[in-house]
Image 1 (cartoon, rainbow, N blue to C red):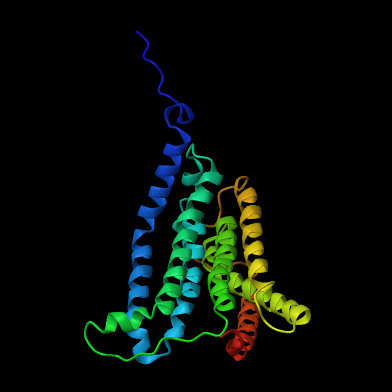
Image 2 (image 1 turned 180 degrees about the horizontal axis):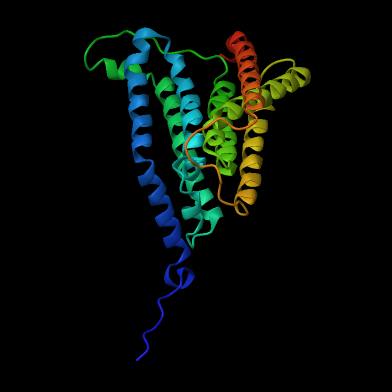
Length: 274
């Protein structure tokens, strides 16, 4: 008697079951990292107002974006298991989207929590459990502009880092993708702000916020297309210096210099966003 053949992946599970399994798998694989993000946010809400201005809590989303982009997008490359991962019957784009949903969703959640904590003066509310802090509520003159940038700038950094690390063929490129993500986001932001000043004579977010969001979505869409045809990386072993290491080092130093210059400009103009 011939036994029946086991059902194929497409016949055995419905699409919703694949999505549920993929999202749960990504959530479980990065659970410690996500827990660390939550604990970091709680620490900033509780402790930051004691040593610095509460407004700095809005910068936590940028830190999360820098870490989460390579961690989620380049998870297989960094772990050295991309060839094994590509052998699964699940389409690659589904894995790409599942990681994007978990990583990007966590980033957006953290950014929104920062906005709500600042808007609701949550630091003072929590500190009242132990002491009467007397912390005044933060007054912001352009909340729509500032909060819009707080949401889209970290997401742009995340999108660029996520896309580059997902397409990377080596561990070193995946780990350093956040540098290019930060540089790219600052370049887009600087160009959009310049257009706003030329068009409206002031910063209002009418160009910068949509531009950052559009670039993020476009980069992720293009990356998903290329990821579907990507071959497994051939350099996922231990970190080592590439043959043209001096070219890579100069490029990285140039990117860091660009980040420093653009960041210096942004800090000098920060008061215009408040």
